[in-house]
Length: 239
Length: 239
DNA sequence: GATAATTTGTTCGTATGTATC
DNA sequence: CGATACATACGAACAAATTAT
Image (tube, rainbow over all chains, first blue to last red; front, side, top):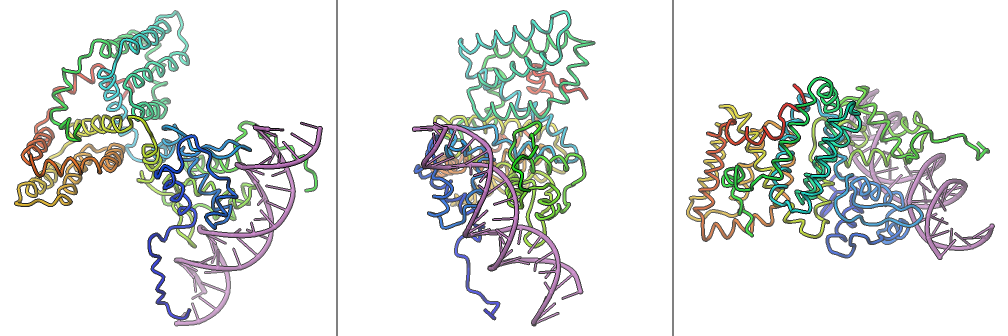
């Protein structure tokens, strides 16, 4: 013990017990031993089989829950979630919340880019069926806008529904979740602007959304799209 | 202490103790009471001031660490991280890892969109200085491609450097982190394709990257950009 | 360099609330 | 309603790492 020269090279990971548990669990998932919807062993079982304390298991599980990978159904067990859950974006939310500087400018620009991207994917993947749904949501929104005294709250809500519908048409879960996140993060500012527009320039709101709607309906994937994508090597990933 | 009748009505949220602690901490951050770089109270102090057990505090802190918001320096204390850390994207990584279905198609499309978006933001925010750096990275990359027997590993590495430089020019932390994530997630597939191209169609690699480079250098924000953004209401957020 | 104090890391034991059968 | 299974929460103790004296 006296020697500072300990040969404990800690062969692989000098990770903590908790992160070891996380690795074990995620590896079991990638290996296919645990699949979405499965119930994982109880905390007690895990702590015994992995030879760690129940508290360490708990911390690991809590982190995975926070990530949106696991779901705890109390008094029932802990299950593996399927699909992408919203919680996976929480870290980004927090990160952006606490970022200083011109973070809002970046957030705004990023959302703008995402919105355009969603629009383009929607144009690519649109179907008659989905367009019918969009039409309904759109008209519902417009109806509120042309009403005598539209409620700001309702307008914001229908606005979100409209954009989420476009994201849904894009047929891309990542796009949907990221869109939802960015929409939520910019809610405060958008509400403010919408309030003003609702009072002084309601027509702008109607017109701009109509343009967006028309773009999805009549948009052709062979317009601007090709110009940009030619630059970016569409088939770089092989097909 | 003997009375089991505690009047803790849990006024608003039936949130767990752990998430209550998380809320307390994050609120203190948004309030500015805790700022990036600050050391937060010790676990013992928190458990006393918040009237919860130290274990609950620990779970909360661990989650915030997993989110990339806090950083633990053992035996020193727990500190608030500054900026956006890569860990914030971990949940997304896990989520995508375990997503089934045509997730790869979605991943591919999403990355394509992001790459285009990064390119467009880069065109918008480019400066002479940054373009000089990009030129260097680009030529470095090409140099490896035209070499007698280019190393696949080196090519992949320089490819990433090239795209990360574009993301850097975009002057948007979100764009950078998301790009990095998507680039990492598609590494396996891209390596495969690149290997084939390196053997049979090296010219394509050179040409396509040259097109991308030229697009940044000569790209004008008043080309395609306006057409798309007009549809999307650029000033919807006010300025 | 050695010791003590501080702070996080880990474990065990126990009690309680809650859902299922 | 009772029994059981499981997560939730607390408290205490000791280990390990870093800093200060």
